[in-house]
Length: 547
Image (tube, rainbow, N blue to C red; front, top):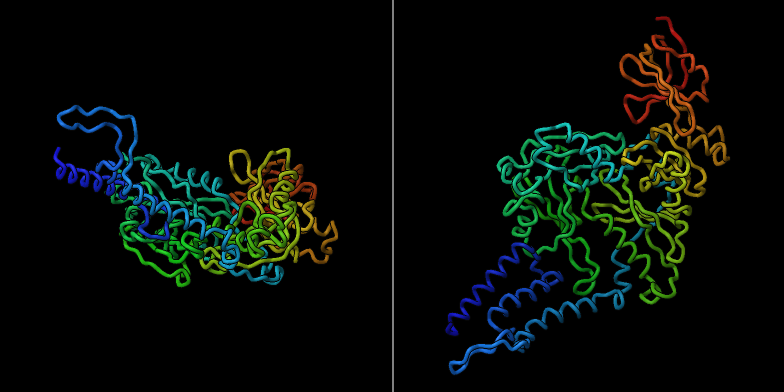
């Protein structure tokens, strides 16, 4: 082949490979993105190989001789120079952006305000602002709800990413439907994704909710309907980080897309700078500076980034070498985080421990998932995994596992609260563990009963006085007994009385032996306290009434 046609063909091949790789890889065309420079190296090979700048497969035919293999690799020097540019940028950019040269710049990325725990964390009668359920448990409830919808479950799966949101003042976990595979997408792309599942992590239930207008652009779609491809073609220079599914207060679906930029050097201390609110139903979107994001969205900074930024602050403020050798005043987050709803926002919670010792926490932080604000509370006590072990040990014969806890204020005492799950991942009990003394543990099958048991345990240990014990909230009802059952919970016998209207009244036999006298068909006057579950109530007192 003559030289000119060969060059044209090589350029066409290189252009085709470059376009195809961009369509598949979707790199951000941004000099502050390491993926961009890696992509340039790949593009150089796409053009270089067809043009023959990398040779050695054969010796070209000269003077009518036949081409023969050489077995040696020869690389054009100009090609090496072109490749060297992005390689040098990656290497030098990484070095000059590293913590070795910029430790204090990394540490100053965030500001942390110290706050008083008792004042800033007011005690609540019912814990309704904390999500104690992890993604695995939420997934079980969501799949169970979806399984009841035969027309949906055959064509769609639930996304494995359950995002924590604040919906009308209460914590919820949401996950949208996704196409099962390419062929299901072909069959259903005209109809789109019809709905999502909302899980209540407080009451442990789930609901499938159908959209008024289906979603078209989702992760499991293909070609032009693929979510990331749509976002990349709309914003070719933006460096995307987390992409979270959320709903607004009216139930409309959106993807919240965090866009990053370096705070140190060329690639260092990547942090959120802008946020895109993308409508997956019609493909429209708006972009905001991170400090001007609408208050209804919740997930701008993800929990891993929130912890990483605090670790920069906690370990690098004294310089790089101090973080490696001396560790003076170095502190870091514990491994894991929970969620708290405060006002209109979701906050991450995690403990803080000294780098030189992880046996206990020296405090904890909360970080706003929308604004990136940090607060530090100097509360000394057991770290989260010790508290989880204490809760599991309280019912060790059941072999329950504890979720990562959150923190609440109970009569001025910093207290871990968590759920205990069975081997199938279902929530069975709630547990409260004292932060300062993790031998003080109480469990219950509702948040209300667990908290009451914990208060009684605090009184027994002398942490609070009997006078400090709040009287349980009581209400009255007249019921006709439909069924009576006994069960052993936490080593104690519990009486379950089911009324004709389906409400279950629960009482401990050790606290009131007269409950053994209750029989089917009796008419009772019951005083009770409500629980987080609307159909379960705790018996405070009872008496037989005239039918």
